[in-house]
Image (cartoon, rainbow, N blue to C red):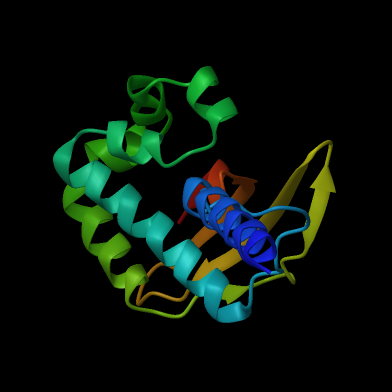
Amino acid sequence: MRNNQLKIGFVISMVLIFAVGCNFNYSVGIPKEPTSEDLQKLVKATMADFTEALEKDDFEGLRRKTSDAFQQKYNAEEIKNSFGNFATKKDLSIPLFKEAEKTQAEFSQKAEMRKVGENYVIETKGKFPTKSPDLNFQFEYVREDGKWKLVKFNIKT
């Protein structure tokens, strides 16, 4: 009887050690399909990160939130240069982006999760209906380290 209790205690201890040592932030298998509310939060967070980068004239914070492949391909200065028209017209673009953050995105297509190689990807496409002009976007996210990370973005007025 005592021997069985020791075995059970040992097994429970090993399970606890394993559980504490695991990082449950990482998803295993197929990630859960984001809800429309999740997608709203995701695209608004992307807009907020982009607006902050413009305000600070520093795109490194935005870059750190992108996928590993994106970070390997582009540095912060290259990201900034690709959005030069918004950066040079901050007095017009920042208020527009802040307004967009407060509105509901209108998606022009249903965002569906798909598998690309070993990764799961979601593409969002639509607009933020701002006073003038509408702010059109196309963002693509890849699932890395248990989070959706930006891998492609395009913003147009």
